[in-house]
Length: 202
Image (cartoon, rainbow, N blue to C red):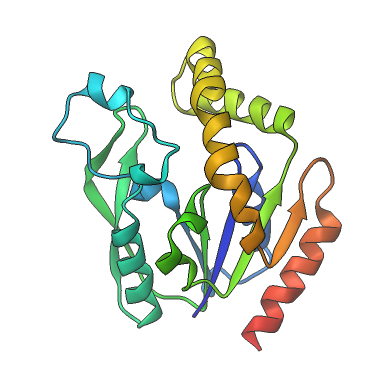
């Protein structure tokens, strides 16, 4: 199994690009796991306390479980992936069974910040997007998909997301094998990336 890590700042277009990559392969050969499914279980604290957590810090992610699950898939075993609810800031009591396929894409902002996890990746792809565009995308997404208010999103971006990006995400670009510029048109870069993935399969 080939494991591809796709990372970059919040709102960089990771999910959109991953979906474009997936569309170039048979669905029986490729699957996607999001880092977001592996936020730590916060059921031991109140909702109000969960709202104050910094979800853009590496400590918010259950990296050890994610590493165990990717290792299991690489060994041909099924896993039970957690399901996370962004409105309650917590895991649900349900899981999703995932079986190994030829290609696994792991996407998330912090996947490079855990060396053991990084060592499992056969190809590391950084999505480069200017900060204004990332902010606009994040604001729109959190309002429409995650039930946040505009003020809530803007405050969080300025006070948490941007500092965390500068501290934990941007420095990880040095580990990238491929950098995809996603400011406007990504077709040329994606063609090269997809060709590289196919060459890893041969």
